[in-house]
Length: 116
Image (cartoon, rainbow, N blue to C red; front, side, top):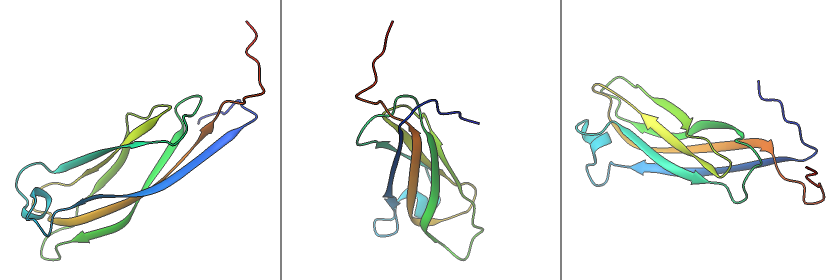
């Protein structure tokens, strides 16, 4: 559990097309090569501490002749952003993936004073 000790909570959200390998015969579509894609997502404004980040698939275009295997995660979460990571394995063929994300956490209060 993340306990937020702040009078101000920020919520950021967005969506990103992580990849589209179908048109160009990329590795995710051919099933050969790297089976992982990662993209840095930067926040418009930094949080005070690393926020809670939730990611979800909003589009996945998969080959129906093979098993569907997918793992989606937010990794390396910091005050300024995170890595959105999609992984698949074995014979799964993925044409394209879009993900949505939401981040929630404490943000600095410009009126608060840090008294030492």
